[in-house]
Length: 80
Image (tube, rainbow, N blue to C red; front, side, top):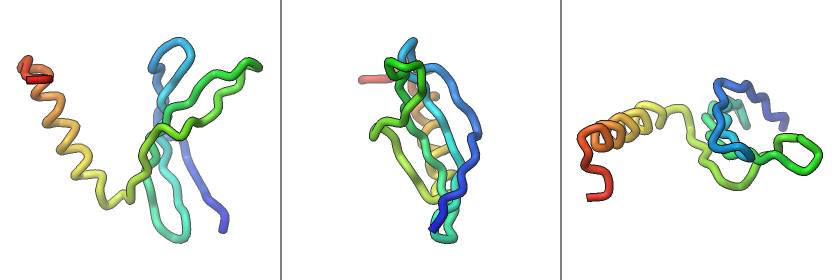
């Protein structure tokens, strides 16, 4: 079964790593994949095992959780 994937966004985590978010179809289902990539010694970006893949049906729940975490950070409550 072929996986079809489309890059939605990427941004730097640091000088040697970046985060990529892909939308992909696998076995007839749609998923969002958030993954850390690293820069290898040849200058190629390769995926790590660090990341998460979720059915797109969970995107609203993920957004709510991120919004809540962001609000906590902005109010200075992170880590308390």
